[in-house]
Length: 412
Image 1 (tube, rainbow, N blue to C red):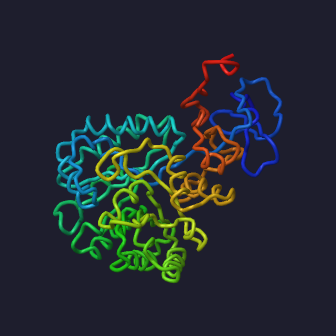
Image 2: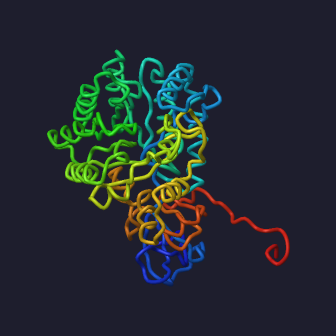
Image 3: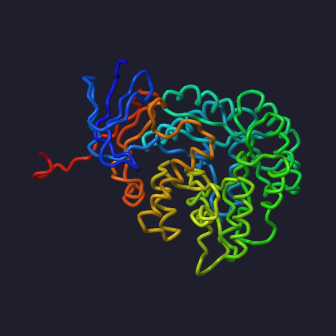
């Protein structure tokens, strides 16, 4: 077998010492210390190698619109309202351009797979959906993009949206998502989203329980529908900030129910911190669900970006390493093992949520990987270590040269 490239001296989690990784025809042909061949080489210099970072919950269609919106209260209701006004004026080219900028930034930060929600309703039409489908094809050499046809502003209260979601699923969407807290009939909303998922045999993903009032949760119905329909392992929920307001006993009971139902949970630290607890004047709650505590109860948990530069989150650089670090700070996590688990929430756990069959680096698997300027996942999270370079199916997709000081010995 002809070897195309060998990455030398990479640190592979769980290995003893450094490892060489050989590529052939877009696959990993060998993984061994001091692999012998005369192919071109890249010296990893002891850096951490990973299958790459994975966004499980991001909104490419409405990124970068903060300048078009008025931010006065900083509340969830304001964010939904302002974005609704703005998206009525979206064009396909506008969405494509803004989303492409975010995707390129994500790639440079080490992300090579993502799930994006795309709003489809009477205001957005199919303009955003068509733009993101084009983007998915155009950037396929560097990143895999999964599209969730999403009802942001309700379903039962928004005539025509359900039929539009159906059409999107028939023409390229990978899954369907709902937002019951914006619907006056959240129970019907949840059941109809499940119905669409079942009709097309695709997963479902809900934005859920996005406030800090422990009462009125829609999570029990999502759990019940998951079990009744045999949808275990195919349901995920984002935000669920109500869980952060529960006492330990109640939290553990919900966590065990989620684990039993095989429902994955994604926390969105930047958005959840920005939008929740706006009425609190002192000792402001963090409003971020403790994903690490859910993980201890057997729940599959991930961390993701959600929004970038819009009314939901008026900042961001699409760095999952930064998001993991933010979560670790908020959750007061500092030990090596716990930080390693946080790194897992943007890598291994995220791959499981997306149902990826080939993510782990192994002989015969795809030559898709990223190098980080770190010696472990915990180190990457603690030091906000940047991605250095990456490959997808054996092809190098980005390179970020190390910065240099331009004075004294360091400049030589």
